[in-house]
Amino acid sequence: MTTSLNELETQLAALKEEATKAIATADTLDQVEQLRVKYLGKKGQLSQVLGGMGKLPAEDRPRIGASANEVKNLLQDNIEQKRKDLQDALIQAQLEAETLDVTMPAVYRPQGRMHPLNSTIDRVVDIFVGLGYTVATGPEMETDYYNFEALNTPPDHPARDMQDTFYLPDGNLLRTHTSSVQIRYMENNDPPIRIVAPGRCYRRDTIDASHSAVFHQLEILAVDEGLTFTDLKGTIKVFLEELFGEELPIRFRASYFPFTEPSAEVDVQWKGKWLEVMGCGMVDPNVFKSVGYDPEVYTGFAAGFGVERLALVLHEIDDIRRLYNSDLRFLQQF
Ligand code: DAH
Image (cartoon, rainbow, N blue to C red):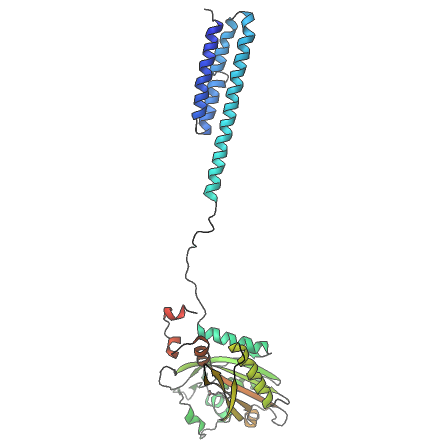
């Protein structure tokens, strides 16, 4: 059987057309590879067509050989191009799948916040630490001695009537103020002293919008040689300006506390009203005697204030009870 040049050229043309279409419609790299084997492989269709070349007259062979090479190059190019296109598409798809959309809303996780009482304590402590003070603490269950007696408040002193105290069956009590920390600290430390003492206090108060049986105070105490009322005033002024963030009018009113002499109460002008924010004074010599300090050598000043009162003012809260109710609608505002 002879094969004519025409026949081979027809076969080549058919092969070219079929293979070109098949390659164009392939849509996976596997399919492309299968097509390569099918058309260009050792036992592929192109080889089979070329197998017929041997039966052609010698002078026809170069022509058909050239045509076959053309087809082969064309199919190879198409396959290469197709591979590249499919690979690019794969990379593109992967890039799209892995792209982060930074404009997407984040997954919301509820976040805890500082309680306004704690943040108020932190702010005050920060201010005094900035002035060189050290934080001191003491127990909430106190003895009569630390809460009253050492603070120049003897058993029959009228000041005890000012504070309705929770007495415990064993004779101890729940401290009515943080002033007890003054005594404990001075017993264990020598002057010079500068402390700020935050803590919880207890009084037999009927609960209402401005009173709570459990509340918080911050105490400060400074003891050194030569401290005067001017140092007290300056310290309080700097503190209140730092806390309220502006130069507020403040005034000192003469007052009475058993553990200070002279004593004063401090008011700040807040929204057009004078508001009492703390008690203070020069440490009474009898208090120094009870801790073994020589009142002829040392003087000192002390102050104590209610954290709740400061928090109400700073955050414009109308009722002290909101600070204890754990109502999330309230707490989430801070
Ligand atoms: N302890 C007083 C109270 O609870 C407040 C106070 C007044 C503290 C004068 C002081 C002070 O340190 O010097 O009402």
